[in-house]
Amino acid sequence: SRSRGMYFSSDDRGEFSTMVFNWPHDDVHVICVTDGSRILGLGDLGAHGMGIPIGKLALYAAAGGIAPHRVMPVVLDVGTNNQALLDDPDYVGVRERRLEGAEYYDMVDEFMEAVFERWPQVVVQFEDFETSKAIPLLAKYRHRYRCFNDDIQGTGATVLAGVLGALRLQRRPPEDIRSLRVAVVGAGSAGIGVAQALHMAMQQAGLSAKAAYSNFYILDQDGLQSKARFSSLTEEQMAFARADLPDGMALEEVVEQAKPHLVLGLSGKRGTISEAAIRKMAAAVERPIVMPLSNPTSSCEITPEEAYEWSDGRAIVATGSPFEPVALADGSIKTPSQCNNMYIFPGIGLGASICQSETIPDSMLYESAVALSRVTDEEEMARGSVFPSISKIRQCSHAVAVACIRHAHDLGIAKASPGCDHNRGETYEQWVTRKMYYPEYAPIYTSHTR
Image 1 (cartoon, rainbow, N blue to C red):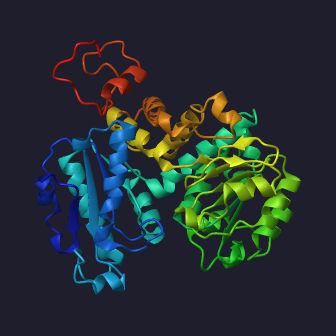
Image 2 (tube, helix red, strand yellow):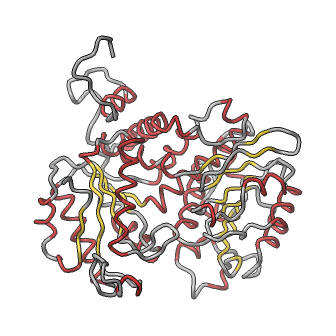
Image 3 (cartoon, rainbow, N blue to C red):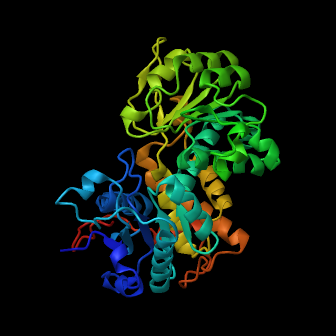
C-alpha cells in the first residue's frame, strides 16, 4: 500500500538521516510537519495528529499544483501529555510525556538537518505546534532554511489579504492600512502572528515600528494586555502591550476608548466578541471590519448574521469557518468571506519551491497578501466578499506563487529563474503555469483536441 506519511519518534533519535531514505520518493518538494501538540480545537493528539499534514498536503496538490508524489506528511512523535491517549491501548505513539527543553529542540534540529540533506530543494511547513514551541522554532529556522509556520505566518498573510480586500471594497488604497486601529481578541500564536503581519504591512505603508505598534489592542482571557503584565507576557506580546490604558480592560471598554476600525477574533471561544462591542464600534466607524477567525464553527467568536444585525448591515465580515449568505432586513444578500489559509499557503509553497528561494521572509508573505487581495472581482465585492470564490482557488495559488517568485528575484534570494529549462523568454506567469500539477487523467485515446 502507498505510504500516507512518516513518523519520526523520540526513540529514533540519531537515525533520522538514515530514516529519510525509507520514504519511497526521491523528489520531495513540500513537507508539512506537526508535533501534534495543538491540533485545531482538539488540543494534544500526539501521533494521532497525522491527519493534519495529510490534509494540508492534499490541498497543496488540489489547490496549489504540487504533484501528490512530491509531498511528505510528517509527525514528530515527541510523546503526549494527553493522559487519555497514554492510557489508550490503541494509541500508536510513544507512551511518554512530551519531550521538553534541549531534548525537544535537538530532535527538531536533527529532523531539519536530515530532510534538507536528502532534499535540499524542499519547503518545510510547520503546522499545529503549540505556541511556546512554534514561535522559537520559527525564529530559529526562518533565516537558515526554506520554511514557514502556517499558523503564524500563513494565517497572518491570509488575514492581511482580507484586510486589504476590505480596504479595496471601500475603494481605499492598500496604504490606508497604516491608519487602521485594530483590536485582537486572542493572544496565542495565531493572534500574535496576525498582529505581526498587520504591523509589518503598516511599516511597508510608511509607518515607523513604534507608530504601528500604537495601532493595536491585544486582549486575552484576562482582558487588554498592558505593560503592567511584563512578568507573564512573552517578548512578542510585550511589543504590542499598551502603556496608555489599564490592564485587563474588557473589549467593550477598549472599543469605547480606542474606536477600532477592525476587530479580529482568534480566541477559539464563542461569544468573545459581544453585541455591545459591535454596536459601539458601528457607532464610531462607518464600515466596521469584523473578522471572527476561530475554527470550528462552534468556536467562532461571533456569527456573520450577528455582525450584520448589530452594525445595521454596515459590517464587512470575513470568518475562519464557512457560513451561508445572510439576508439583511432591507432584502439584500451579503456573502461573508471565509478567511482560510488555503488561499495563501499552497501558493507560498509552490512559489518558493519553483524558484528555490533561500528563505521565506516576511516581506514575501506581504507580497502574497497583496496579490491575493487583487484576485477578488467586482461582482464578489458587490456581495460583500473580500476573498475570491473558492472555485478560483488555483488562480489564487498561481497569483500568490508569481508574487513570491518575483519578490525572491527582487531580493536576490532565488536560485532558479524562468527559462532555466530551455524555455527562453518565459514570463513568471508562464513558468508557474508550466510547473503546476493539474489533477486530470491523461486520456489514452481521444477524438477531440484537449
